[in-house]
Every structure is written in C-alpha cells, then in structure tokens.
Length: 203
Image (tube, rainbow, N blue to C red; front, side, top):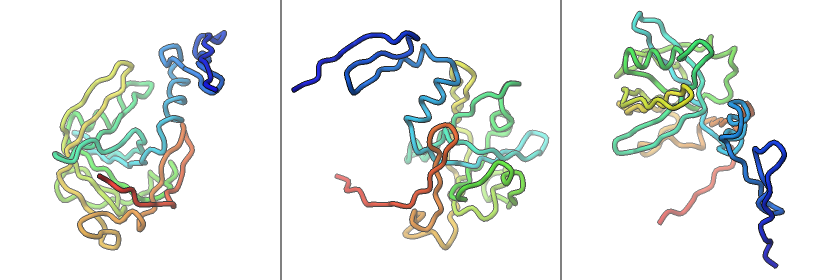
C-alpha cells in the first residue's frame, strides 16, 4: 500500500512532515548554526584538507578545511569554501586574495588542532606558499577565482599547477587510496577513517 503524504508544519515552522517516513526542512528558516549542522550532517564524509598560504608580508598560515573537493579535471580545479571569522575574512582567504597561490596537503590522517601548529614545512616546487612536510599528497594551486556568497563565505577556486605524490603511495600516475590514511569529516566535528574501499564499475 502506498503511503500518502501527510503534510503539516511543525510548531517552529522549520520543518514539516511530508509522510510517515520523510521530514522536509526549509534551511531558510534556520539560524546559521542550525543550518551548518544540518548541511554538514547530510553531506558526508568530506575530505579534510590542510591549506597553506603566504601573506603579502611573507607570513605562512595553515588551516584545516572540510568544505573542500575537486570540481574539474580538465582543467584541474579544486574548490574550498572559507567561512568568515567573527572579525571578517580568515587569514587563509586574505592571503589567497593577496598572493593568488595556495597549497592543499592531504592524507595525513587524523590531525588535531593542537598538532597543526607544530607540523613541519617544506618548500613547494611551483608556488611560494610552503607545503606540509610528510603529507602523501600535495596540490600546488594558483587562484582561478573567488565567488563571494551571501553571509560572508568565500568560495575559492584553485587551478592545480602541480601534484606531488609521495613515492610509497604513487601507482600508475595516481595516488593509491589503499596506501593513504584518508580521514573525512562527518557532521560538524566527527571524523571517519576510510578503511572499506571497493571498486565501482563505470560505463
């Protein structure tokens, strides 16, 4: 028997029951924190990227970002959403605007916020910002463009100028996912380790 929709708004007007098995939520009715938690709980897991930048004055900055992914392969483009801090744009975004370069270091496993400040640097090959020493994968990027989103978020698009992959994880000009300690972000602050990898047939 087909379940008929049973529509009706909840008292807080944020969601309504569509059927016995489905709730509809209107993000426009949520405050910023609730909207963030809703979206991050639905889009998961998200890659954890460490992004290094260099200020106009030559000061290095490194920060973790989970609103990150590859969005094009020809040309190779990655995207990272940089949410504003209470004082305005984060140093990562300001530095990218000023110097138009950044590096994405990936595959370091679970890295605590305290450990990020102590990670060692090494020189990059194509761009001025340094990369994180020991990371199995680095994407050295030039700025392709920035899309300013309502609410203060900056969507940074970077063109990958150079890919550096550690010798022990590279295979056939690709990073072997089974040899990298991939960690993703689930929800607002939980993490997951990628351990069950299977092949998916492509047409």
